[in-house]
Length: 205
Image (cartoon, rainbow, N blue to C red; front, side, top):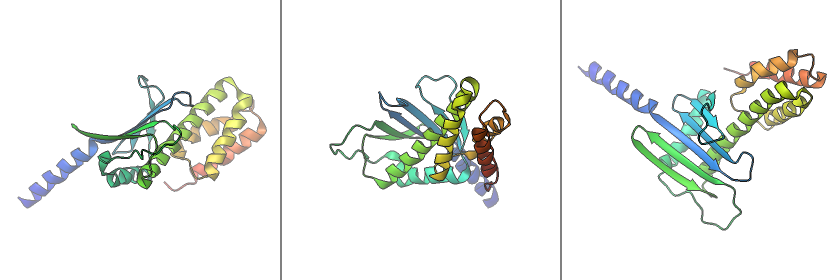
């Protein structure tokens, strides 16, 4: 009987956890991008979009370590039930919203500027995801329409690597391999793309 109850409790907790999501939005008209929405499930499955009504958001699978760090920060922030806005007179940096969803239970906090270290650490994760998704999108666009400009974007990716700001490096491998094998692209871009691809492939899984 105890085994059955324990199994039922474990199953119930698993179902509850699977319903948990963090939704981050940032609205900053006039900046690039002017709008971002990132949704992350407890499983690590995430979506990225730059329009509220985007029909097909980018799909991203976060690694367990990154996902655990993000959800741990949400836990420390009491699932966004606390006030995050500092109220200080500072320059506008965009309206940020953290939203916690757990089935029918939701809570959220909004701010332009915060002094809460955990909120700022969480925002940095979302900024890193934004940087990476934009570079991935730009690599795809340049490879298709502007092959002379591919090197500039590969350099930006290399810079993110040096700053240790790359999230989900595996997602870059297919396009980096395509760049490395494309003889119509500058040799320096092909060599750098090949080097980055090998570095990403060598990372612990």
